[in-house]
Image (cartoon, rainbow, N blue to C red; front, side, top):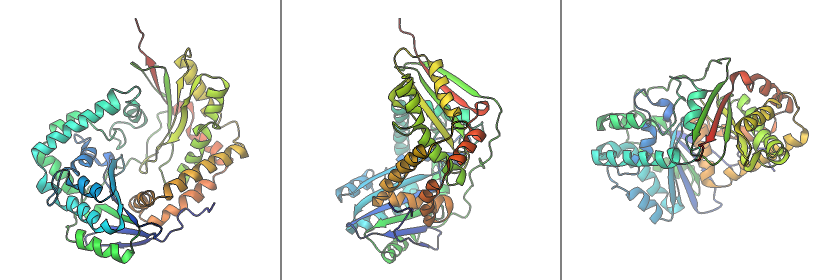
Length: 430
C-alpha cells in the first residue's frame, strides 16, 4: 500500500474575483465530481443567528435567479448525477457527481445559486424551509433515543461565547425571529466567490475547468469584507469535571466521555486520530475488548471512540458505550473512564498500533477511491489550510505516530479533572 496520501495531479488557480479553483484530472472513468466549499459554518454565526448556515444548506436548493425551485436537483439527477450538501461548525459544502459531459451544467447551476439566490429568495420559501429545519430537529435530535447527545456535549466542552458552543442545527427561536432581509444579508456576506473553493476531480482537464469556472463564476463580484469567525483556539481548562445526567425515553443507559484535544490538521490531532482508533475502533479496540468482550457490561455494537475533525479549536475525542441489560450507568461510566485512563499508564502494543494504522489507511484509501471523496478532501485542505496538496501529508502523519506519543497525549489531555461525562438513564416504567 502506498504511503503517499494523494498520488494524483493537482492544479490550482484563482479567478480575479477571488474564487479558488482546484482540479485533479483522472481519466479512469467518464465522470466528474464538483465540490464547492464555503468558508461558513455554525462557528461564524453571530449571536442571535444560530442555525443560519444550516438553513442555507436547504435554501440553496430552492431556486435561484435562472433556476426554478427544485430544478437544480431535477437537472442533476436527470443527467444521471447525484448531489447533496452538508453543514458543520467549520464550513458548508455543496457537491454533485455527474457524467463528464455534464460538467458545464453542474458549474452553471452552482454559479447561479452563488450569485443569484438572493433575488429569488421569497418569504414563502424561507418560511417553508424554516419548517423543514424544525421537522429535521424533531426527527434527528428530539425524537430519537440519545439523539440530542451532540447538542448537550458541545456546551459542556466549550464555554458560552465560544464558536463551537452551539450545534449547526441552531436555535429555533433565532430562526423564527429573523426576517427575510437578515437572511439575504447572511447570504450576501458569506456566499461570495472569495469565500469559496471550487474543486473538480475526474474526467476533465485543468484548462477546461479553469475556462468554465471563469465563464460562469467570473462575473460574480467579490465581497470586500467577510467577517472572521471568533477565535476559538484557546479553551481554558476548568480543572474540574463536567457532568450531566439525562433521564429520558431511552432503551438502556448510555455514557459519553469526552475531552478536548487539538485542532484537526495539527500534529497533535494526528496523535488523537490514532489514539481514537486504538481506544474504540472495532472489535480489537480497548473499549470493545474490555467492556463488550471482557467484562460484558457494554453492548458489542454500541461501544466505540472517535475524534470529531474540527479545525479551529481543540477538537473533541469522544468515547461511548451503551449498557447491557442489568448493567447500571455508574458501573458503565466507571468502566469507560478506566479504559481511557489506562491509555496513559498501559503502553500501546505494536499489535494495537499496527491495527489502528491499518484501519486508518483503509479508511483513507476508501475516501480517496472515488472522485467525490477526493474532491471533498482537496476542497477541505484548500479551504482550511490554504493548499489542497497538504492532503498528501495526512496519512503519512498518522503512520508516523508512536506509542509514546499516545501515552503522552493521554496523560496531558485525557485526565479526569477536565473530563466531560454525559449519561443517559431510562425513565422508570410503572
